[in-house]
Length: 203
Image (cartoon, rainbow, N blue to C red):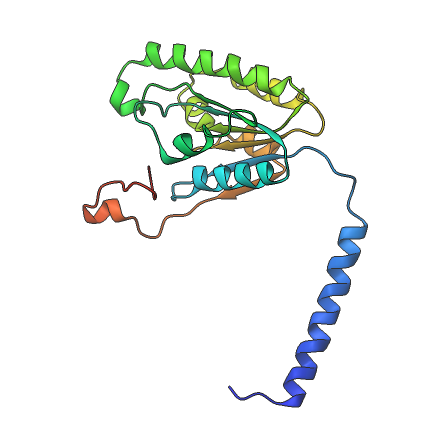
């Protein structure tokens, strides 16, 4: 496609119209408030996105908290990295491994219950600006936690606190509560081709 002055002018006019619309939406947006972000779906990237937001929040000097449900048998790269900043991040690995590894529902329920008690402490602390509840959706999907209690605790958190909830199979009620909800879709995954999880990518 060739460039021309007319095409440049049309582009400029479109961008000016778009900027005016976006500027008006920003001007009419409500004041700042804490958000609930739900990352779900079968595709890769839910926890990766959550930890990207954690790094972003830290860059702004925010105090943060992480509770990992389900995961826990092996250290991950994000755990090894964020534990370098104990003055800014409270990092709690509370799971005992994926459900197909533990194969013990009562043990999984006990682990999830303990993890939620730690989560509630973070959700009650107004000094914490962002809380990551990694794989909470899985714990709720399997019925390890009382959904109404979880939603109530999330609703009662400090007004400026952001919460990121990850895990496939998010409950409809969690999706309804979320201010921003993203469903990760999978087109391809290396594991399907017989490639195991790689450090720095999945671990």
